[in-house]
Length: 196
Image (cartoon, rainbow, N blue to C red; front, side, top):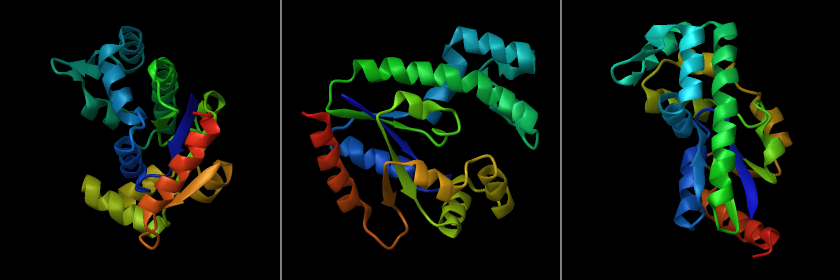
């Protein structure tokens, strides 16, 4: 079975593309959702977060997301620290999940694949490309945030053009080219590559 990464900058539409692959019967691992789950369920990770961010990192409902966000917002050192704790746990979890899949290929959808070195555990990486203005607009609408907040988030991600050059395949989600035919063509190619 092939291990496929699916990445793209904030607002590129990678989750939507992943859902199209799911409709085709391809299992998808959503790294962001998994990270949120692991921060509550993985005891080792939970203890590390408490050690580094204090008891306030958790409340009666689990992870205190507002508190953690306030700690890492505009603080690159603390954001890097958070990522250095969460990413290895997510990579381990994704690896275990991949081993359980029985399809020709499985997808790991994650914003930060090259940034975390995850590509080392993947056979191929698909990039989802959208122009910056479209990405900003989509994210502002989806997350109800300002343009400035979206641009701040983008600064924590690898430049989109560089990221796409590192990918083996690129899906253009630019509101000009329909994405479903691109996904279907890639599905056929990946199924053949897998030898199944």
